[in-house]
Amino acid sequence: MKKTKKLVLFAMFVAIIGILFITPLGMIPLGAINATTMHIPVIVGAIIMGPKFGAALGGVFGLASFLKASFAPMATSFAFSPLVPVPGLGRGSLWALVIAFVPRILIGIVSYYIYAIVKKASKNETVAMGVGAFAGSLTNTVLVMGLIGMIFADDYAGVVGKAFSLILRSTVVVNGIPEALVAVIISVAVCKAVKKAVGVRADA
Image 1 (cartoon, one colour):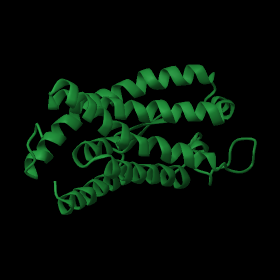
Image 2 (cartoon, rainbow, N blue to C red):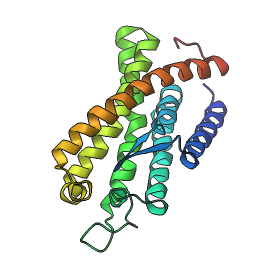
Image 3 (cartoon, one colour):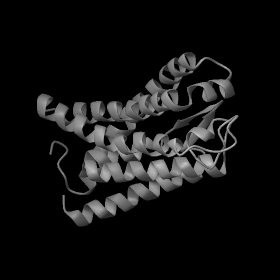
Image 4 (cartoon, rainbow, N blue to C red):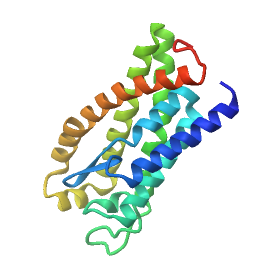
């Protein structure tokens, strides 16, 4: 795919992330956590355009997460923005930027490389897209919650009112797996449609 087409697609995916950011469809509050669909444009962009563009789109997702936490904070938003004070500390933590950005950047990288590996091994484009999307989505859930557990476990558990181990399990099972399955369905369909629209063979 030519670089011009990639830049146009990149701009389109940034716009989609922006739309999801300013509408309720992007981050859906579920108690103390948010279910998200904003990782899907990152996954699709990575599979179609490669890991560099995927990582950049992940950075845009991370920025949206930071802005959401900063200017429409929830009880647990201190984990995603240093502008929100950590409970009992009276100030924010710069580690929140790591949680907001690093897992989201890695969505694009993991999605592409898992897709590429599975495609090479299976010779099946659809399977590769699905596995890449599933892996990318779980990368977000597992790394976000894992980093929160490493950095803010006690503070997060105190706000939610449950042991962090229970929060982690419920988030992965109740949020992470359904999000990943939705990402597979949508990502495969959109990847095929976009590839067809820009003149890239579905098995290319």
